[in-house]
Image (tube, rainbow, N blue to C red; front, side, top):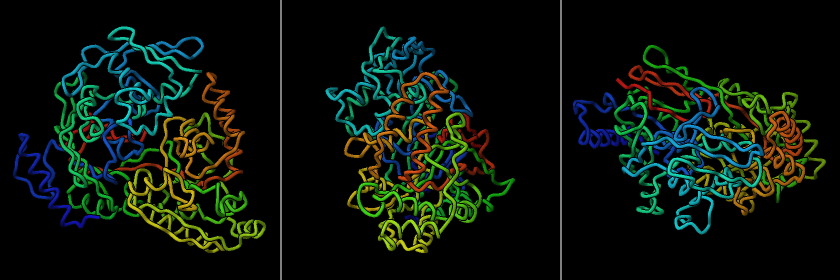
Length: 526
């Protein structure tokens, strides 16, 4: 955690460094960000700038400005539209996709974007024998596990063969895992590519100083509309109170994930608070394989014991609503509206613990200091600890910095902890349950089912839903899955959040996207 003084000095060094390589005026104070340079307060240090290696929205917010995919999300929606592909066709059986690529596009290193580059990207991620497959890991390669072959038809045409119809395919191509990197740059930097990113986007990489900044600058050779801002500095400021102080003092122009208790400090005309509902779920992973939560009654007891309404209203200041299950209501077509959240019922929780013969279970609870979509995790963790203690749980909290936290949780809780905070922001109702609830998604099998939940009926429903080409049928299958998972309670379903950000009066033309990514191409910084 940085003190405000150190953060100011770091920003001064960053400004001086940037000014030395741009035509910006050097006459600035530490609390005045340079005109034409947007300074963003991020919640954490990036793990990587390689889209094939990233899983966190914190990192995605940088990536979507450096890279592009074949398709992208249309502004203000989760609908797919053309990007590096101008058009595409789908076979009648839903197993073949053919994309016509945009011509004349080049990567930031000057090499051409073409069908060979597309094939390189997907083979690198999916083919074990590819010469650069060992530059992984590729944790979200699940998104494209249905792809059996990527074929170059001609320089501007690429063809994907799938092993079965796969409904989320186009949506997954628009997700950051589908962003396309320069093959030449990967060959040059190998496993270090994530520190030296090269894409085709409206911004290109300038520098990355660990725990200090990532700087990107306008790509003047961009094929589309040029970025309205000369450069963007992403500053990792893990402590939310420090981010707030920096925003109020003028050290940053844009702050993401404002703590709910701080929103009232940002008033017009000096500041503008922006909110956007999206497909978000904040939940607690429970170890379903061993320990107290191996018993469904104990998992249900935890759901009854936690006063989620109080968390949403008091801790989160009304910026979230209580979650009912594993599917966010933002996916209206697939969301089961009949599903009711577990009510706050401490007596029911105590009765279930007694029935399970575990009236005082000892729990190790992993909490993070902050991270993508994590809301106010320390305050929430403390409130949860108190609620669980009130019904008999003995809860020991262990707190970690975000990337350390992910390194402990993603490989699985077994033998380490009984419960862990988690937040997901997804692009399709398939994504979260498929990657985090199936038996085949246990960590030792390459997935994110860190609590080792397993239900064969859930596995069947999720497999069927992703291969159906009929949206109504998919909706029915997802709703059946939600009912089972709600009863099995592999997670404590806590909250669905409305993301927020705040900008100062020097920033214009900024909006948040339902995807929760930061699209900064059109943002103006005066």
